Image 1: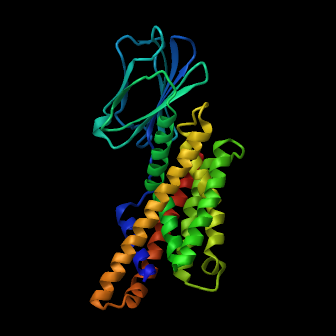
Image 2 (image 1 turned 180 degrees about the horizontal axis):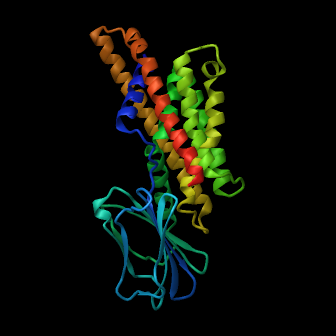
Image 3 (image 1 turned 60 degrees about the vertical axis):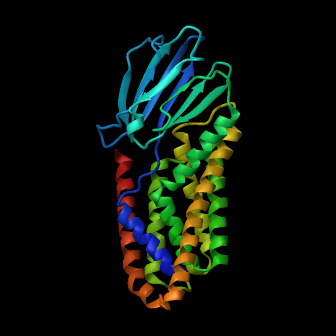
Length: 335
């Protein structure tokens, strides 16, 4: 019964998207170079090779731009660099993101000061501006990175599709718990090591293998050979591929960086956010499964035959789409 429901979840994924689109916020970094001067990095998600989101940083009237803005498309982002000056520093100054009220993308802001302290905040359509506080906000760092972790995992269709396939293969409640726990421990380890730069691997190949991991699970579902290692011990598969997924999470974290004075707090908050998002997804699946199972019992419907009819076609579709993701990401090696 639980596999019948997971097939329905996979169907929803196929209908909702044909492309893996990670949650990618815009990022504004202000690096203080002297008492009055800041180097500005403005990173906006790109839409293709020459298009970007219409988001623009607006500083207060008393902020002076010292050098011409330098801009370029780099990878999947539009990058602007400039240098600004304000007498007495930015404390008490207002920073606004023009156009943010019209899009769903968030903006993560980090201000790095000469004394090593930093200030982090998160802007969205409901809150498009903020006043620079000038005092490091520990709780704001926790909140910002926690929410970033939750939104990253819930916006990562490849990660969620991998988890859904794992739940299908695991089948029973006990095996699901063991399988997801193995995945969690594994990706938490590599996320931490990569974020702290203890282990560095090129991200494009990692992303390609993440997509390939879903192709592998789809193939296992199609073959339905219950005597294989994957079906007998899904925790081994979840743990092995979980190590690679952790590097994927770390690449998202690297886009905004970690505040130098609050590295442990920010890293822990992001990791916990990823786990919360993952638990939300698994919880929704299991709760919805329980509701569907109770409804079918009331209607006295046997779901076994229905599962056999749709199981393999859906697995073929999942494998086909994720194979396309794999090819697309491999092709990106040479861009």
